[in-house]
Image (cartoon, rainbow, N blue to C red; front, side, top):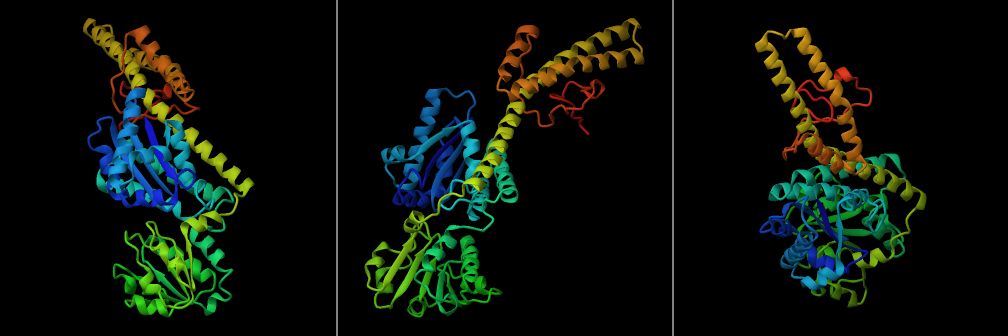
Length: 441
């Protein structure tokens, strides 16, 4: 079963999200360790959300699920320093199919402050990569996150959402344009060289900025500037004094811009896109300093473009429904495998007895195997239909009632669905194939 705890710009304060982001790196390991009900965890931390995606035992009771939620909140609390009670008041808990729809919508930019933003799909991919490195992912979460990326691409190519390349940095620069009369004459200091810095640089150039200097707290400014036509610097204080606009976009935990650095530095517009904050909020009290941080930017986010968003949500809904149906088919596959094994075991035993009596011929054996395939075709197709409609358990129970066959908990890696145009002769010739034929070759 899938479980998601989400704190985002709609249900949590910016301060709480900032604290949660500080503990994001260690949170996933804490979610898996010491909880036997959790087989995998992926943590997604962005400037506007902190989400924990978990795969838990399918047969977990409501009480167990509640305990898992509590344990998850405790792990998040321990990693971030946020009180567990405060977290419980702020997070929304999603389960099952709702988790699928939510992640697909998040990855497609439909739950962002700026609907259709470009960066979120990459952040979702990196969250999965980080879980792989930490060893906390699971097969179910792998499939979920990979399909989320596929859905995001489908939304981008088939709807108008995100076609303008909207993002928080672009929104920030649009807000800043009311203060900046001519970007081509504006001296810009960009602080940060990470994954968000490239998007920030592109947005600055789209506005017409040409005089751009970059500073890196980790010392990578020269490497980042190489080939990009901007100047690297290691002199932060001097570059601050020489700039008109400062844009920060790093993931360092401590404030980079503090009141002492900006005091007496002249009139400046400071845009803080970092989470945790890169700029001490106290700088806004300095004469001549205007601060645009994520919290302020979020308040000015445009309304959703209704038609484009509705189209995108239709794509997301269809993708989520197909994912859920495919997962249901996979869940019923062991029962189909058990039925096929049962039938072919009986057939093999009868053929073996016929051979010992001298009553068997290759033609007869071939005909019997073909007949078995014909008889199994309808139950295999029916199993798929029941699984997709949410009634897969009825097939499993009927199998036990009629034949006394109980499926073993195996993962049928080679199981494929029965093609709609399959003929009886095409349907399985061996006991290890379910929901249609999948040869070992």
